[in-house]
Amino acid sequence: MTTSDAPEGPGGPTGDLPAGVRLQKALAAAGVASRRVAEDLIVAGRVEVNGRVVTELGTRIDPVADKVAVDGTAVQLDQDKRYFMLNKPRGVVSSMRDEQDRPDLRRFTDDLGVRVFNVGRLDGDTSGLLLLTNDGELAHVLAHPSFGVEKTYIAKVRGRMTPQTLQQLKRGVELEDGPIRADRAKILQAQGDSGHTMVEITLHSGRNRIVRRMLDAVGHPVVELVRRQFGPLHLGTLRSGAIRELSKIELGQLLTIARAADAGRKGAR
Image (cartoon, rainbow, N blue to C red; front, side, top):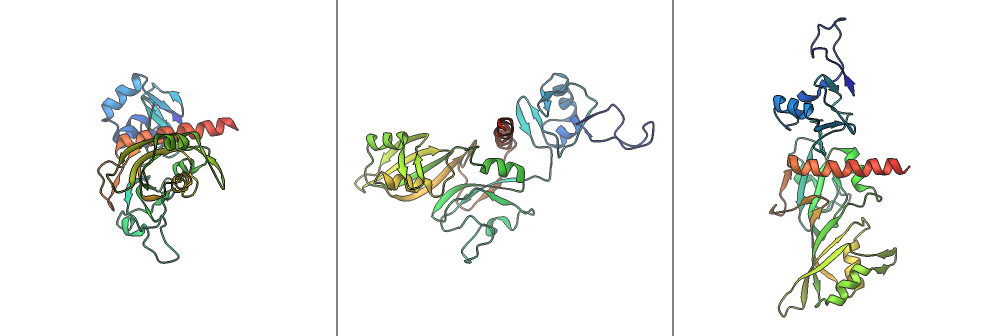
């Protein structure tokens, strides 16, 4: 971050271009507020740059390298970074190019005008929320095992699940690759006489097919599985196969937890 009160164009004492972009201009370009309102936010001490409160209107920043937050919520100033939510249908693999020529994510991303990749995976038989982005830094943090972003699934399982089995999921089950437990779990409904139960389960593990393996281990194999939530992101009413860009609020929430996790991981070193 650089601070300077020189004008934005040429004409300073040496005629050189000043480094960086004025903070209020960067905030306005990011859609946070008009430049005048952004100036008020800065003066009021509501804006942080790289973790430090900035109140000087002459402050210049690098929109690509500097981390900016307003009222504690992260702001993405790099306009080249894009973030999308996809409701992945069943039968589509979480890959940009499948070597076995199965249906892949390209059918949803080819018309975006930007090259993106998926953050994490959903197996072919699982539908629901998948995050797509070209922000490699954010993707790395969210996918890192130590971060442990929470994910919520709705599962239709065989059999009538009892409260005792639900408690077993929360206490933990032993799998071939180690123990695992649900952070939260609840029975949504037993489906009439069909012998099936709808279950909501939340966990932060990123292990392969973990929800299916957990439920199979307690005697309730999965019939259908949908991921409804990824961190602060909710699928909502997004229809199957539809894709949309994240809202400013959603992006702010996602960046805030990702930056906090990254900072905590670096501090632990």
